[in-house]
Image (cartoon, rainbow over all chains, first blue to last red; front, side, top):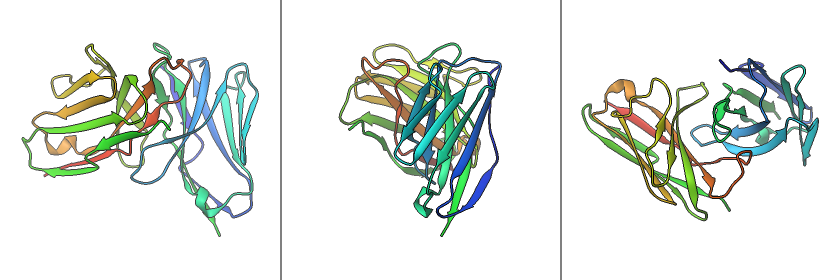
Length: 113
Length: 118
């Protein structure tokens, strides 16, 4: 079955540094991958989507890469700010339905001032 | 745009009670809505896919008689937890896809309902 792993439970970095979060998947070749942000007690908020034929996607301070050979996506936040502190989830389209999303367990990011 | 409202945000009730959670798309029509359950520090677990005007599709292991889903209009889906027990306590989140949206377009999430069964 599909398996999605995000790199660690928590990532602690200094303000101004670049945060890099990892999403690895196995037993599947998704057509696209999405990244969401979730704050405590709130629903996820969509950030970026990258398709299988795209290597990289950018949006302001965010950058996502998608390596279908390594079966890995990297999510970067440059010039990180304390307000970026949240849990970041990666999600893949479901193998039996591209309308469904399968989520990773998320990486909690803490940006220290 | 693309706002999804979920109500109530928090509910505490006694064991054996049935609880209804509403999910509304406020500024768009949603032919498909999804219901998730999330445990503390865990990922979102898809429970069911709700399609307007038809029966919901439940994921393996989810009891359809326990978690009743109704999607009677293009802007409203409801999840009813029947005869709730303490093990049903969790954070329930809905999401919606706009009508006509391609499969690779994002889902729009509500802010979740914290359900606590005493």
